[in-house]
Amino acid sequence: MGLTFVAVTLVFVIWLYFRNNPLGHSRKFMIRRFINWFPLGMTYAFLYMGRYNLNVAKNSLGDLMTKSDFGLIFGAGTLVYGLSFLVNGPLVDKLGGKRGMVIAALGACVMNALMGIATYLLLHGRLQVNVVLTFSILYALNMYFQSYGAVSIIKVKAYWFHVRERGVFGAIFGTLISFGVYFAFDWGQAIAEGSRRVLGEEPSDFQKAIHYLFATDLQAVDSIWLVFFIPSFLLIIWAILDIWLLKDSPALAGFDEFDPHDASSGEEDEAFSAIRLLKKILTNPIMLTVALVDFTAGVLRNGVLQWYPIMAKEIPQLGAEWVGKQWGLWLCISGIAGGFSAGWVSDHIFHSRRGPPAAIMNFIMFFMMLGILFFLTTNPMIVGLAAIFVSFAVIGVHSLMSGTAAADFGGRKSTATASGIVDGCVYLGSGLQSISLGYLTTQSWHYWPLFLLPFTVLGMLFAMRMWYKLPEATRRYLMTVENIQVTTGKGFRRIRATKTEISGKE
Image 1 (cartoon, helix red, strand yellow):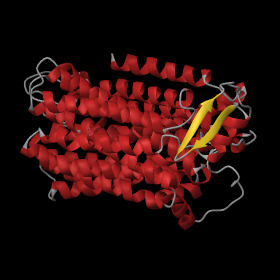
Image 2: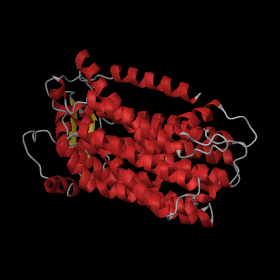
Image 3: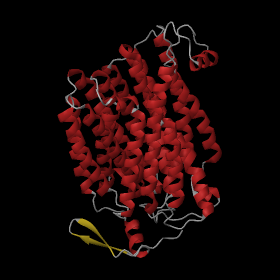
Image 4: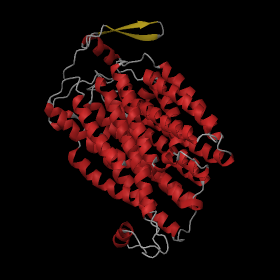
């Protein structure tokens, strides 16, 4: 079921991409842009598989990695991930998105292989050093390289997509994130379960394949380390494809450049130092608001994505077992729906404003977290459905903020720095919840929704602060090309559509 859904969704996303052409790009351009973003996006999806496989390993390792251990390890990784953007964002703005994505894929490949080796040694009683320290260092290094991928995909996108196309592409971005989560949880869990040997039973074909490929002990196969090693292998393949196919901009692919009408319009010939890039973003109040919205999204996304399966394992979810058994698939479905809903609403109803749909999505999360709080121990069905809808809403917020608003307000010249700082805040939020909930849920699972609920309110308030915000170049484009009159009210940006929707040209 899962593979069929992913295949059908992938076909639908590709179809939608070619159908969504408001600027009237040539067929040749659309095909070349697809050849550019598809391997880039799939590399990012498999980076996610090599990021959340730690969650699968934790559940499979049992007492060898406790909840507190997991919280500290994941917290260390997310803290490094968040802080590394201060360096890697400006660096990718200089190196380009292609080089950044290749660095991410190869670096994460090596770190996942090392975590696989450490897991192998742990399972066979040969790991002589502290488990938490070992995995914290390796996972932190993995997340350092992962951070290159997050800024690189947005850097490339900023040169290839106009502001009026970015909402829908943000949905595609959210879809790829959702695929990565599905790969990590469902594929990873299938790898972990398939690699276990039950004594007295005939080894499965999968276990025999593991034996021949990796020289494991066929009489006592327990190859959980493959949840790290297989993503490592897949990342090599996608890195090679990126080297072959990716181009940083249309000009490098043989096309004329076009103005995407973001915050970098008019700055094409300016050179920016790393300090100037950071100053430009850190002194921009709109960018800081975007970062704060995504900080709350980071708390909520991983606060539910990580902890629901762990909660379901400790508190039997009678009647709602189907949620936990295919958690990755439900995250994938809900994330895709949330990304497309938020992106479509942003571009088609709010004229490429990102604040309104982000506020609406936080409003949805507020009521879903209330449902989890009140029915945590009495109605597993409500809890499971609420967790799925939180995933729907939070991926919508994240794809709009990290995937779209950062590029809009940061501009393509400083996209990597802008999206890096925003995405860094996501993982600072994730690190906060990981360390906090690792401790709090050990005391009582009721602290889980109580801790997360206030962040839905904060996210909604921050998003409402940017309700009428648009980059100036976007506002001019709407007025002159699409005949959408933009006026300024006291303290607000009001868009009054005379609604003569005219497709722009390159």
